[in-house]
Length: 235
Ligand code: HPA
Image 1 (spheres, rainbow, N blue to C red):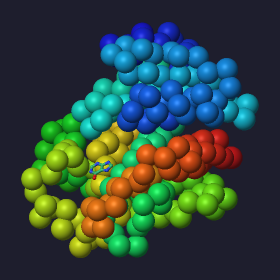
Image 2 (image 1 turned 180 degrees about the horizontal axis):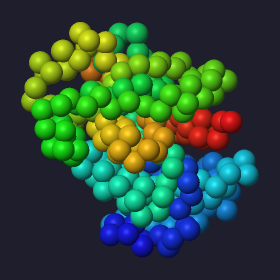
Image 3 (image 1 turned 135 degrees about the vertical axis):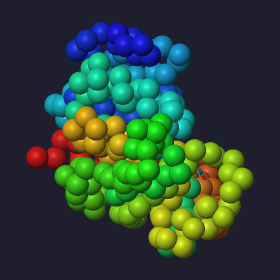
């Protein structure tokens, strides 16, 4: 057990998928894993371990925002020795050529701040995906219907943003989408020598103001989970 995860030692696989929503962890485990067993219920932040194509996988909710993800990713790495951590989640599109339902593989994650920022003092650390995972995810995405984009994203601290000028600068600088977790995940993976990637589905759009209808979510999110699983176990 760790402070926020009730799993026994050995209950958590080396590969961990991390959706923000604990109920999405449950859905993904029931949909994609065999023999899935619930390994965490502390604070309702559900986690499951099961098998996918002969490989052991854990799907553990991270909660919303970097402070929450940071707690779970720290404990998965430091207490359970997770080696590969892939965020699966939704994001808001920020470019005209990025459409609702598209999949985004986040190469880098710009931020104002992460829970790790303090330790860097005056330095602006550049949180970056693992290239092997990114490459494998891009290859895996080719066999899915979803359109895939590889590029930079913005990990924001706020969903209800009072600084639209920041979003404008992100758009000007080619940022594909906004979400709230990847930059801290990439920073922790770098610190501990682990592999990390964020595979995201565009659920809403900051420029066109479109939003993904609830009825479409499962199919689209399913592509994201399959891409993440295939990338995690690519040779
Ligand atoms: N902002 C921040 N995070 C998000 C968004 C958004 O518009 N959509 C999905 N995650």
